[in-house]
Image: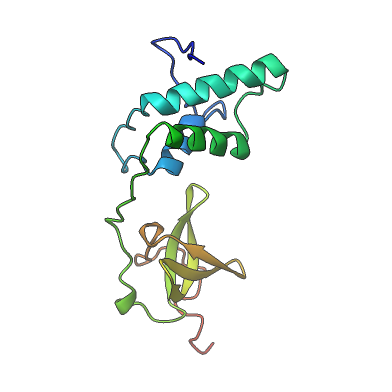
Length: 163
């Protein structure tokens, strides 16, 4: 079957409207842009698979504003069958865990905001922190040491005795 994708077709990528399918596909394929860089264009096979999936959903009356995670995973699988190669994400940022003490206050970038947390340990490739009473596994590039005076209402170390 020959795809009917228009030459100028672009996958929706507008966070303001909630249509971020291109960003999700970039994440799945390892093509995310570094902070401050323009996002890379998705390969032709991915655009073609997305268009065909969106068209099929529209014909079936199941089209929505954006695709579900299952539908996006299907787009990735179809594009992989056409020869698209997954890129290994390079982690150029890392949290210096050798300088961190257990219980030390750190700052995590989570849900688009900087939030206070406390360092617990490193597990696999994630930094385990305590945030709002829950242990969370955070990517090392989203964790940093707290600056002086940042989040003053949070204890510097949860293991320090209260005076």
